[in-house]
Amino acid sequence: MSAGHERRPPPADLVGELAELEVAREELQVAEEELQAQQQEIARLVSRVDRERRWQEHVAALLPVGLFVTDGTGQVLEANPAMAALLGVALPRLGGKPLSVYLDPEDVRGLRWALRALGTGRSADYRSPVTVRGRGAAATGQLFGTPDVVHPDAGRARIRWVLVTDEHGLPPAEPEPRASGDDGPTRDAAPVSVAEALTQLTRLAGTDADRRQLLLRMSGLAQRAVPAADWVSVTVGRPAAPRAIGSDSAAAQDVDGRQMRAEEGPCWDAAALQEVVVTGDLRADPRWPALGRIAGAGPVRSVLAVPLAVSGDPTGVLNVYAAAADAFTETDRRIAELVATAIAAVLDEAAERESLRRLTLNLEQALASRAVIDQAKGVLIARLGVDADEAFARLVTLSNRLNVKVRDLAHLVVEGHADEVIAAGT
Image 1 (cartoon, helix red, strand yellow):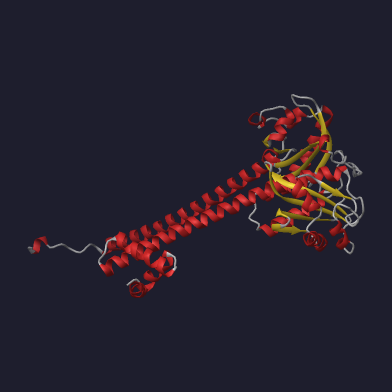
Image 2 (cartoon, helix red, strand yellow):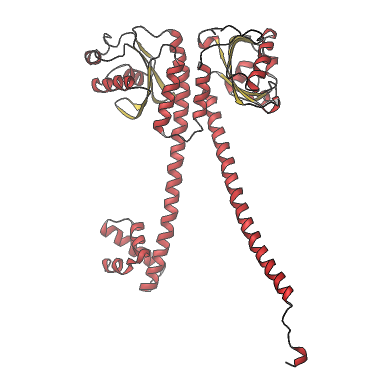
């Protein structure tokens, strides 16, 4: 090449600019990778929220009481089938409707006060008798409200409601005196109402709590919901061979253990007969003589055992205990049945989630095993000069001879023990 056509080196400033562009390109690539990772995390969180919401909606659909959510203006955002049936409105058409149009005019003022108080966080709970006037006959009951999202903008607040009609047999609201200057309606003074317990139980459907924590929280909510309850336990599966037992106290554990030793009792009968079993004196009830002989030293006198079932399939038993004799009334029974319905639904969802976890784990293990087996086949093909089918056949033959899983042999081959595996197969 002539001297006149020699390629001259690029100017120093151009080299510097190219270097800066390369650095910028690398920084942009790192930023894109970070953005992709953040987008994947956001997608995972959104998927989890949607999944939890579906589980909660499934549990709510199984409850016979009205469950719904409004914003701070009283516009219905979500509702369960029981609420739609009570109002005589198709569930898809209920969304967006103002709750006030379904209430007796005398109850609208109290609803508006509750919406302001709950939506802005001035009040943590609300309870009041109401008359509901849907397309069918009017129904009287009790309306419970708790804030879900507090916000000064009423349109962005979210309030959870439970409507329990009188046919469910809940005790009437016990009003507390209003503070001076408070123009709001009276409300129940109890810190945890039956409706709040039902709402919290539906929320358990979307949690990642393990079974022990789940049963403990269920027992505590049930104990606080049933008026005469002193202690509560939840038996999952058959009492003779329970898959799990959760309780809120040592006293509940004690009487659960006594029933297991006697192989009889309210829990056993509730599971076998699939009906509510009540006793006013566990120590003297002639239905369980063996239990009576060993129950005298225990703290429990009254027992209310409610079977748990989903779509007719037995799940377990809710055991409600009291120290006093003849402690449980018809109201206690009805409340326990409502709570048991929610507990059964949550347990069903928990079992489905556990099944999905196991399926995911098995699939992941299968994919990992397949990858390792393919790698081991490649090693044997290179060492022995055989094809892929013959390499896999040798792994299977040796697996049967040594009673070792194929994937474990494959791991040995991949981890550098191919010669030993080949020698064992000769």
